[in-house]
Length: 445
Ligand code: ADP
Image (tube, rainbow, N blue to C red; front, side, top):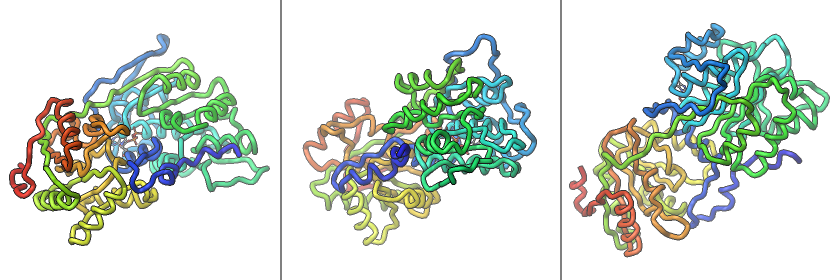
């Protein structure tokens, strides 16, 4: 079975026991980020252009109108509420839509508009009159493929003639049929099956090839080879689009194989910082005292929302149960939840249905829920060796320029060892973590 690697989902769940620190696969983390971050992440950093074909001038657009899209496609873009291209789209779109087609490698953090950019390019390159697949988009997992397909369906709302087919688990084709849809979005194994084994579509007729979430793809055993096998069957004229949220040697080596003569653009992530964050620690001598500290803090949260980080699933569930019993409305997000459950929990928290979210390390990055004012480290973040994990601390607590609002971080310290970790964090960032008397949380400003 070629596609045995397609379904990464649940892998981490199965391997995690309740007392182990939660581990999430890159694909799961990526999906969660997409879900929690519904709007565009605006970036103040400048776009970096790394390589360009000296024969083709580089354009940038400030409006969607300037792209000369098909009217119904443009209508779909506006219908999605997009007024102007995001920073990455300003440069990516003219390249993706250029005639003759140009290849692109683009790297920027999640939420900066990559998916919308390549979906627009995919839709605009399709010739609906030709009844065969012309565009192929590879995603690392079932869920990520569906997310992309939903964006395409939304954007193509006024282009009903464009048809899309998912090549993912659960989708089947009869052997001797030929696909008539214009766009295929799928996972590598299934696409290999359909394209090479069953030959229900002709890979050499693909004119646009999109590799989404390349970094996640690499992190998934077997996917990279499958992508390369698919890539080998494509025609020389096929336009290659390569996207990644992170940028490192492995990703770039992969990109080199897939994308000849590319324009490479990068938008560096805005650094998170602890500026504007008031940090405190609370001394507790037992789990029960930690619980009291949390409920005291909860009482003072007021209009804002809070996220509480626990080290293990067991602690998270214990805390949630106890708070619920005491009449608090809390949401819990841990790795044992199904994808649908996670989406549900995050939606409710975003809407403010629950004011407190208890979670493990699932969300250490990307909690840009604007209304979150307090972050509680029920357990301080540590690495596998039990040392202070300053990077995770920064991801949990830190903010970027966008939400330069004030925030409060509270660290529950319950042993001499955790006091040392707290001090290590303080030293690392050279920012004072102040003592807070939990009995008197009025001190919190
Ligand atoms: P990425 O693929 O980099 O994670 P997305 O394309 O998914 O980013 O975009 C992130 C969010 O921003 C999505 O909710 C998307 O609908 C929205 N978005 C994308 N482009 C624009 C735009 N030009 N204007 C407003 N919102 C946008």
